[in-house]
Length: 553
Image (tube, rainbow, N blue to C red; front, side, top):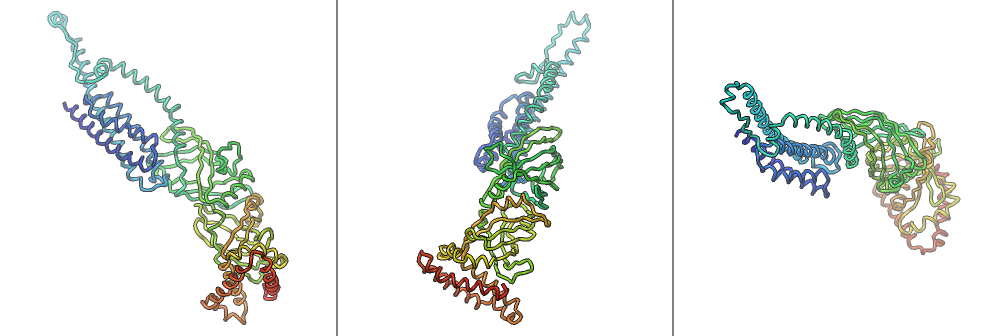
């Protein structure tokens, strides 16, 4: 009676746990917007348990044991979902799921324990009956021959274990034990060597690539490689000591997914890694080897021109957890934000200055946002400034380290005033339709990449594919140029240095606004035919350009 009571209580606990899990998992499916295989399996087990927990007898070793194993599998699946689909370990893009997923995982384990507890009580009842049968048979062996003539021996025993197979297990427990050992000896190797690897591969295929919480640093570029470090907020689950064998990872431009023969643009040889519970997933002191130069050039081009881009990564490794190992093939595509034609780049200031020793006569302060979670050390980057097909100058960012977020960078370069004077009519003809709309147009082309005094031809070929053309507000650019150039002129003149403070005054700023507004309105009043505008603007611009050298520019 005692075993029956405690088994019934355990069944009620399993019933309550399955109700809670049923509700929590249903909310997860609703939040995800789709039903995953593991979650459907758990929901089915919960629904079956709602009825199965009330079916007698109490206890039943085989029946309760079956449900206990089933819920142990559910708990394992829920633990995997906790790692893959939540922010508990940094893999999920959606935050706020960790507490509820943890609760569901806990109740899966509790429900499994309740069923296994009831199965334990059923096993105790079976053992008691086995001992009772054995004791009765031993007593029968000890009966005297004279007593045997007067007393008939009844070898039947009141077996209290009820249900399918219960009495058979009691009477033939030895055969069942041998059969169970043989079944385990066959099933465990099959599970380890045949079922585990496909399951591990399935989990890898279902796992999202952790983008959020991942940061990278790329430094010390050479002609065919770049050093990198990667660290993340992704943590290894407690009580787990996973390890990965060494692997060769290859990276491809994302649009090559349907082209398996496409060459990689980069490769990395990752050594064997071993993690402890709570460790953050990190890669330190690695070298990314650059692959096919044309693919790398395509990759740089796609990153520069697109709002988002994708990278496909492939590798093969052996995963070891808790003494079990499985070889998995990793083939993942991850999306990242791109520079979107550099439309978010802003010019904070621009000034024509007196030439320095290197011949630089222009200074620009550029606000450059980096949407990617990576710090990239690129060295000295030089580009050509073009209007149409005319190279009107160059610009260099020295010791460029592109950091995540918005940062300002100083650019120095050369404005080719003689080239501008020589091609002034063609330049004005190109700018005319834009000036009528209050805009200016210019472009930039990648030219040189120098790191530690050495040219990097591999990187240069990639950056030379970047040919950007951008339009900007004419009033803003012209005002910045005039303020910067006048400020530079007055700041370097001892006789006029007292006037330099006026550059920041509202009076000077308002005066420049009036002049620029009037000029742009005049240009807008000209007809579509650029000839009247060119007849007026070409001589004026030539005069200004011829005066600049006399002013020291």
